[in-house]
Amino acid sequence: MVHPKRENFKMQPVARVRMPEKGVFNCRLPETLSLLPGDNCIVELDYGLDEGCALEIFGFHDEVDAAEKLPSFRVVRKLSLENDARLKENESLADKAKQAFMLSVSTEKTHVKILHMRFSYGRDKLFIRYAAAVPVDLRRFVGQLQRDFKTHVDLWQVGVRDEAALVGCIGPCGRAVCCCSWQQQFPGVNVHMARVQDISLNPITLNGSCGRLKCCLRFEYDQYREVESSLPGHGSVVKLPELENIIAHVVGRDIMNGLLTVRTDDGRFFTVNASEVVTVHNVASSEYKESDDEDVGDEWP
Image 1 (cartoon, one colour):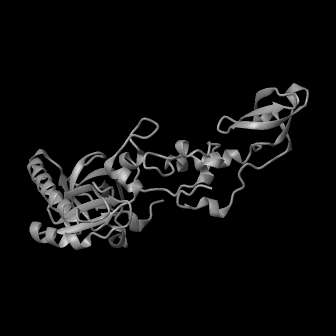
Image 2 (spheres, one colour):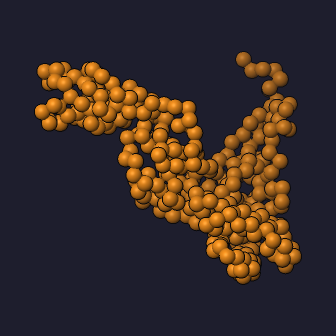
Image 3 (cartoon, helix red, strand yellow):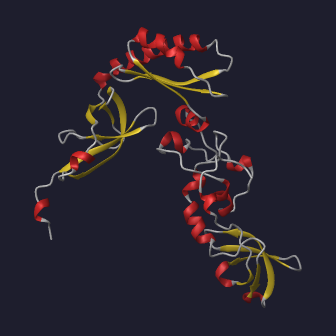
């Protein structure tokens, strides 16, 4: 049954737009504009016009309290070929600003690496992202840039994860790292997630291109944790009814396939289905703790 007060509600289209700095904003979408995920567009933000890429198009009903939910930002138009000249001018101007900024910070004792510098589409803001081995404040250098280029400078020192997202690189899987291709934010990751998934606690295996724990350890953690809780842990004593009730110890597990690798007292190894064994003594391989579910700063035990 349709509520009588909702018969005249309108669906307001909204686009989720990702900016070059990886930030994501919700922007109102004009009903006359046909925008698809993956399209580049010009958006109006609090600092002026800028370019972005549409990630998702969705909508919600224009209810009484919709004014509080509707984003104040809006999509102006698609990015067309006519905008290329403006973008090239912005790129050329950003190169000049980068050279001037690098000359200014060259006096710093700590090496500063400029990762990302660009003007917004309307040149109302100059975005600068840099990395350094230690925290360093470069705000004293932005005044001259603001005066020379008549813009506002948005300056941030980023960490190694953000550096990988901005610069882009190839992960151990052979594909572009998730943080620079589709991932919108960094999930909390810790070593406990690797233990639950029976991954070797080796930094070479667990660390991504940025040198920190791989973000993908979080992606399947919940599924592994659910299945793993029903399997005997490493070192557990089990009985094998299919093999004349031989007693064996669990030495390996294929969690998602529900398989166990067991070793008998006489040194033989068998791979059996977990549903076909009887657990005599279970040794929990990963007791869940509330503190383990938090991001502990990628620290190793």
